[in-house]
Image (tube, rainbow, N blue to C red; front, side, top):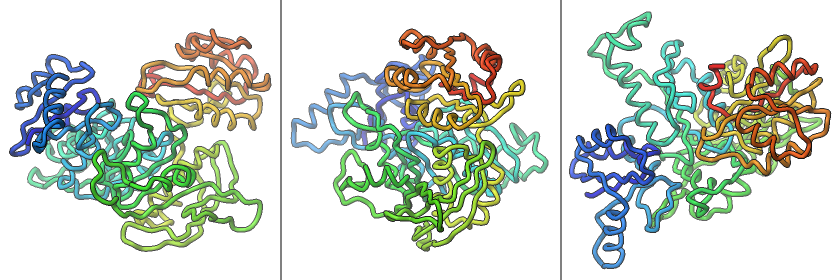
Length: 500
């Protein structure tokens, strides 16, 4: 079988490598963005993988598409890759195919436009005692016997990173005399097999692999275009509907996915879509009573009391389906870090997913009470007597900025510090829309711009705000202006910003 793996930039090299290990597979790799270094090319070629260019793709696909011969070339490409001929398998589906017999523990996968990493962090807290393996934009983490280990810090959330995460966990357990084992309180015998991971929590961009017991779509806050404008994020993320149970925010499901006739997404759909359970979540605030799960919301929050450090709310669960086929109906109260509605939506996604896994509500209540926010992403800290609410995210977009500004309006003497860097994700922020949002703020919320992004916006605003090149300068200036609460919205990788 000939296999052409397209796009070495977004995990294709790892996928090609895995296919090369299978019998009767002749693997070709097309570095469509020309990013491979010479040493990486040498590694692929040493594995018997043939490096090809676009002429190979066009010659082979044109020949088979114009004849009656059966095409024996399987094309594997990312869902966001814009190719003229049909793709046989996306990178997500390839990872599902390659790992379906290797990972034998429960899996939760997370995709969505916003809130993926925060949801993964909450699930890590909930399953802290079950030795979870976590892949997120913060790296690959492993919790064993209550002790946390960071196996790799800098890693993408492309689907191929799931393979890397599992291999790192295998290595962790397979080498009792080296690596992390040297600092562990208890050591296992070398002959013990790899069987310690209890659950996998995988954050994945643009879809799911089909491996998940529960697949989460946190939201479609912005349905941005992909594949050079030929597709949309919502379509790519619909790959998550290959999970056994799908957890999706109610608004996205009703507006988008309930109207799609052929879920789950497949590049070459030839059979009816798989049937799976679908559980939705939503904030359902009520002034009195026990709330309502109208419109078939399975997990709703009501009687919400927002706080900067702790938010308390009641949860109503109605007709939620678990992976074991049970139906859950219950009420309970949760107290956790969720200073604004969009944080609470992330909490609900974690609650809905955990209940779908069959986890008792008592565990959710206990573990979420320990969640204090995600350092650097959404967290609270004191800075020279001033409270700073940090919203730091490499994928911050205009919707996130709007939500954050709505949150700060209710606090005493707020100042908005906003800025960041370019090139931290594939999708850059819509500057024109951001300028429109900032230009519409009244003087009750002073704005200080910082970083490269702040400098670019500064040039475009008619009402000229203050600009500080460095983030520390901006925070100091906000304090000098009498700020009691500083909202820091910064587009950056936390690993970069943490060095400040």
